[in-house]
Length: 302
Image (tube, rainbow, N blue to C red; front, side):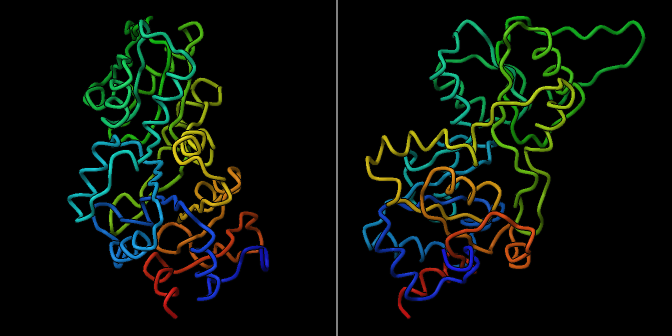
């Protein structure tokens, strides 16, 4: 890794990277799109890589949508991506419960949105909470008692634009008072490109609030955890060294690549800026970096 992974991608390095990779793993927010706006040149870049025989995985920490909903978003943006090419942190949460034999007679309380609830439903789990609890409120009066469902066996926390004090207390009571209740976080991203014009608070803000209230750390199933890498390796059955993680965040995407043992490419079209990458205090370095997806693919023809 030249200069600790601080070198810009060169035409020669870009060609070498593509030749050495069979599967590209793409983050979505800040790499493919910002909010509901496709980043310029992405569609053409993906078409070029497809024409070279490369396989794709879209691995997003954003739990607001299910895999099916993300496939619809891709289609709306003019790209036909198969649902089985998409892996979300909402899917990861559902798979974590299933692989750990979470009993189906237990409920899951969701601090998050429909993506989590849909993925839980697809594997046979009943969930409560979610968007509908965003409309609920409490009254902090001396005689007020907050009741909760004693059959909740897990709390899943993800990005939630309807996060409120009601949900915080519900999650708090389930984790504290229901014996053996699991505390699962889809991810701990501090911010995200949820619209095309601004960064917004990420799921990590909701996770930290719940974690603080229960004085307990969650099991994190999204990046940089390598939980989903097991699914990818089983599906493609190739060596992890033939995969490359392409992302815009050092602390999730690039760290995920490091943890998993695959190649890493940082694009500067999202959260991470060049000064942040080159800052001497930064200890997470990609193999190389490019301005964006379009820039990466353009280098191939130079």
